[in-house]
Image 1 (cartoon, chains in turn yellow, brown):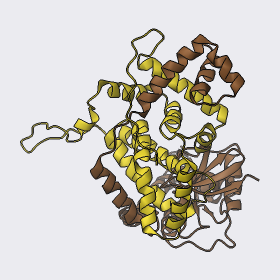
Image 2 (cartoon, each protein chain N blue to C red):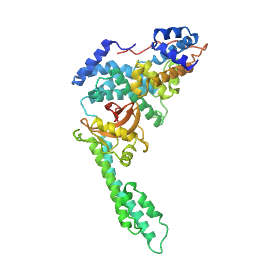
Image 3 (spheres, helix red, strand yellow):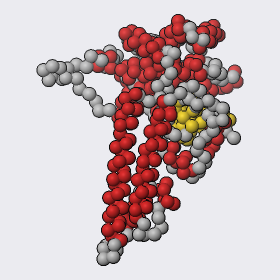
Length: 201
Length: 273
């Protein structure tokens, strides 16, 4: 699911127009990448709420950084790097803050309006969240950039500032641990393959 | 499953094999079983629920509102709070120095306490002014003045740095890293990531020089950065663009890379000297 030449060309044109001050081009650029940026944040940060916040931070970071984007890397690679940092930052912020309970006017603990999205409908999704959360951060980021961001090994190495061999190793071990955590061991109880995937811009 | 088999299975899944490697993978039943398991895991990772529509629109609107505006270097509230706080801190430091100095004078008076630990305490209270601390045990007034002046100077420097980082950038021409010595490097790099530093880098070459110096041992650990990618070596302000931005400096392979401390966007990259 690598981006096609047309998509890359579209990105290049939109970036050039946005850098020249075309706000419509900027909005198009952000809109076509938002879902994938959100997906990267969702898988790294581990919850929809944190992903929402991180994706917004990433969008703002993209807008602020766009004048300095020199086009040496693919726009998507650059954008996912910003998204990765935003998601990791959100994750660290979440670890520092205590869990909040929502209390209604009468002092009773109310249902968090966003909790419904956190407790996803599918047990499979809870399993993948837990399995990803159990991965070392370095492994999780590499796997997400590969399997959600569709970056190749060299692009991931560029984003993470590590050698390509390290990227391959992290992805291999990360996926293997995920498969084991999801119960997909040899001869084990395998889960059905989910089909929902965000559209590639 | 050996490491080689695991790597082979992953390369197979990623279509990163030549024909020969692909054939050898397909001939290994263990590898192909691993391929099947990996594909299930990958599909699970990719099964992300779509983002909330309202949040998407809110995020896009927030991002569009920042278009055309310079990135804020420090929140206005934090700046004003810092301004009102520093004078009080300077006065408090001066008072503390007076108390310590006074206690030392009393102990130095004949018949007083012979223990001169207070003198050591007062002279250690500011390592940067260590050379200025009077050698004569009786000159405590001078020591007090030195410490108080140093504390005030430190406060002033911090305040100026905060104001400088929020003000329009100076021109890049002629700008050079203001920090080259280990002592001043520690003073700047000792802060956590986020660009809170008085070191001003005006050109990509400055960034490379800063990274080369900051990377060299021995030094105080440079704290942490919210950004990732490469080895974080310290924070500074990059004035080669307008407005100047706080940056976290990394060593990435053969390059020095300065990233916007707020957004982690790469600002400048330069080969290490």
